[in-house]
Length: 337
Figure 1 (cartoon, rainbow, N blue to C red):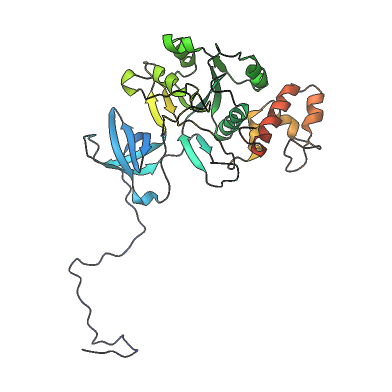
Figure 2 (cartoon, rainbow, N blue to C red; figure 1 turned 120 degrees about the horizontal axis):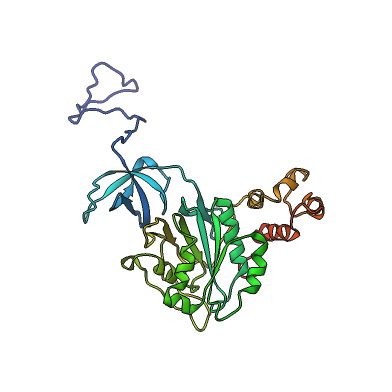
């Protein structure tokens, strides 16, 4: 056996040849100029179902994307096998910039942010007026997430034959949120779907709500029959709905006017750790001019806030300021409070 001393850079040291050749490492990545554009329909354990033209493609995220993840609604660039045949797999190599993002955290003290839906322009907040009972704090949190993410909110109140919608409509009237009120019978004969459909034409709408409020039943009435999802019933003991939707799914509206609905799993909490309270005021453009004389870093819910005097002078409806402060306080309250 030949031995070497500490100085190993001698001329007689031999190197074993590499039969595969040597390829230096590089940071230059392929441009994938042949990639085609698609939309993510759903994500399941690392496999993404995407729509490319009229074909449904199964794809996975390319390694070069690193930790950047694609979510339902993302516009992506795809390479590889685009035939859509069984057992084929393509690769997502780029994710286009998002126009809007619906995000949530598990709780207010959870720093891990979860992106639920991308590129939706409307958030339909579905809540039952009874069975299960409405949860205004959860509605408030969804509204804050919508305003923060750049989505227009739509309030859908179901089961109005069991309880009056007046109290909730009075609570959210000052916010100017459009709404639809439906009964259980209207779900059966399709009237509810027709009313909601008027607000969805040509738009991408994410549906969110507590389990058991009729969210997935409503989505099923809006999409083609072959794309409908399973539904459940409310537990008679706990008064809570059972999770039947386990992942977000984008579905085309059943008409020629275009538009998408995105059904999301039922939620029992909606954390707002990721929301900067200073951005909530942007959802109240009639109040924004009154913040010019606010103290620096004003939370708009403190004693020296200039909005109080500005509203008292008649520049805006006092109910709007009350609504703003109620939404700002949602991070300090639990959904069930």
